[in-house]
Amino acid sequence: MVKLPYMWMMGGSNGVENEYFVGWGTLALINAGLAQGKNRSGLNWFFISLLLGPFATLCLVIAEKKHN
Image (tube, rainbow, N blue to C red; front, side, top):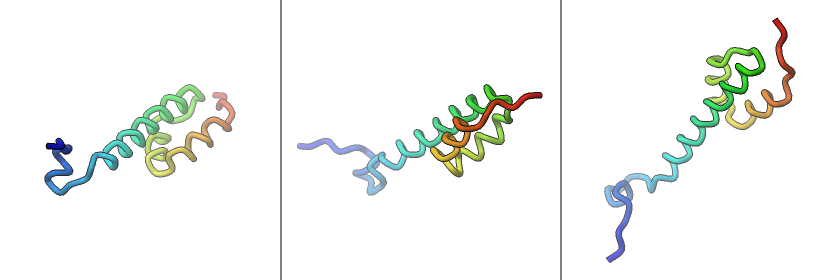
């Protein structure tokens, strides 16, 4: 007998969508840290990253450090 993941047996997702959301959230946290390192608002960039994902990472990498 083949064992199937619990969510799949219950007619739900196979876990791929959950992994996608976890990865997207992790990227948003990394971007928030990257933004703070460039003297930008980590919270704002966290929310921007939730919407834009990897494109927000690209913008942060290209952006120069903000001087106070």
